[in-house]
Length: 416
Ligand SMILES: [Zn+2]
Image 1 (cartoon, helix red, strand yellow):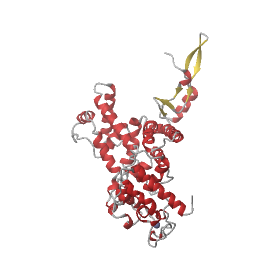
Image 2 (tube, helix red, strand yellow; image 1 turned 45 degrees about the horizontal axis):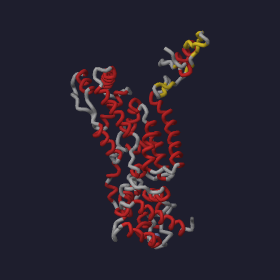
Image 3 (tube, rainbow, N blue to C red; image 1 turned 180 degrees about the vertical axis):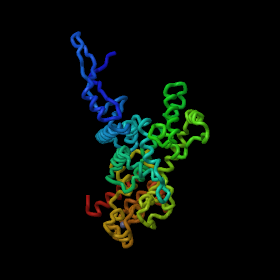
Image 4 (tube, rainbow, N blue to C red; image 1 turned 45 degrees about the vertical axis):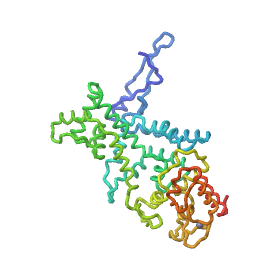
C-alpha cells in the first residue's frame, strides 16, 4: 500500500490524558518512504485533532466539537457568497436563498447524521415555559450555526437588527436549520432500517439495544435519536413490557414518518404565530414584554404572508419594501426614546393624534397623497385594507410606491 506521508497524522485514543501524553513522547510512528531507491523512515506527526472523512475529531473533546471547523468554514462561505452575489448584482432573495442552501447549508449540515442529534436535543429536551410554550424558535436562535443563517437573512433584508427574528425568517419563508438537520438524521435512521443483513444494520441494532438498556438517558447516538422522537411525540408504537430483544427488533425495523415529524417541528417553531395575543388589533396591542410582541401583531394584520419572492424587483426598491414589512423603517413608532406610544406623532403631517406607524404611512398620512394616487393604477380599489394592498399581485408596483413614500419622507424630514 502506498500513502501520502504528508497527509498522515497520528491520533492516539486513550481515556487517560497522561497516558496519551506519555505515549506521544515514547512511541514513534512512521512510514517508509522511497527516496532514490532507498527506504527512509519518515516519522508521522502526532496531533490532538485530525480530519477523517471530512470531520475533525480527537480524544480531547466531545464528538460534537467537529462542528467547530464546520462553523468556521460555513462562516467563510457565507461572507464569500454574499460578496460574490453582491458584485454581480444577484444578491436578491430568490437567488441568494438557493445559494445559501447549496453552498452554506451544505457545509453546516456535513455529517449532521452523526453530530446532529446532540444539537437537536438542545431544543427538544427542555421543559416548556410557564405559558406552556415550547420555545423551540428562541432556542434555535441560540445555536451558532443558526446564527450564520440569521446573519445571511439580515444581510439580504439590509437590516442590522430585527426586533423579532420570527419576522425575518417568515419574510423569507425560512425555518431554523434544525428542520433540515432533523430530516437528514431521520432519513439516515430509515436507511439503517432498510439496510438489513448489512453490517451497519447490526451496529444500528446494538445502538438501539444500548439505548433501551439506559431508557435512552445515555449520550450514545441511539439514545439521543430515540429521545428526540420521544420529545416530539413520535415514539414508535412498541410493546412496553416486551422482552428487550423483541423491542430491539421492532424498533430496528421501524421506519420514521419524516413528513409527520417535520410537521410537528414546524408547528412548534411557529407556535407564536397562532397565539391568541395576535388577535388584538395592532393599535390596541398592549406591549407588556411577553411574546408574541407587537411587531408580530402588525406583521400579521398589516403585512400578511410575503408575496414578493416570485417577482423580479430591483434591489434598491426591494430593500425599501423588505425593511417596511419587517418594521425596520425609522418611523416614530419604532423609536420610543422614552415617549409613550400616543406621543410618537408623525412629523410629516404634524397631525395631532397621528402616531406614525406603518399603517399611517401607507394608508393615512396626507404627506404621501400624491405617491399613493398610483395605487389606483395597480388596480387597488377604494376601501381596500392594508393587508389587501400589501398582498397585491403586482409586488414590483407596490415596492415602487413604498420606495417613493420612503424618498418623500426622507426629503420632507430634511434628509436626502
Ligand atoms: Zn403623517
